[in-house]
Image 1 (cartoon, rainbow, N blue to C red):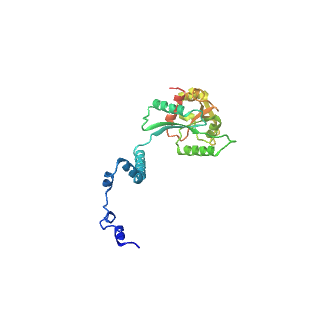
Image 2: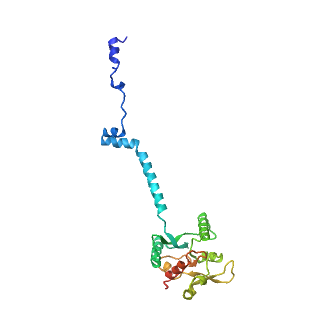
Image 3: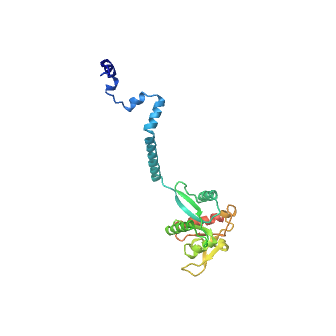
Length: 242
């Protein structure tokens, strides 16, 4: 049996610390009482995830605002190159050099030489080739392509379908005379008469030192191009003609 004195000694006094009301502390007070190591631990436990999320949201908002208020340069010449052997660096150098020749402002305008279009042969059509073909068709319809450069076997199809302009309607007479021996002639679905719709790029600077040809490339001006005059200047640039 527990003695009275032992029971009395085991009972906490009314003034014991456990019975004292706890005083709520502000975050500032809590932190002021912590060591630097304790503060780091406290931050990692309670605020790290929230801080990362807030920073990510702020960065996303800043990026969105930047893209809205900063207009992207408008392509003033878009050349779609099919099955090109030109590497990305060469294409970029051509873009820069021709842009300088054209005198464009790179902040608001740009030259695009897109070498990402790769198509398989008629006997080997993959899903990727079909998606590329769909992309090209969409770009043609929207008038986004100004110049088409493709191997002769592919170029023939686009010329026959009427995607390309008759070069005698687009090029100055003097330029037609100089390039007459390089013309690629074709009929179309709407016109059985043979006319020049392309230019063989034999000897043009885009290929003479920069690429390895798989098939003879031909260049044409797309019929609904928005920048046909720039396309003409591009032809002069490629053949180093005035």
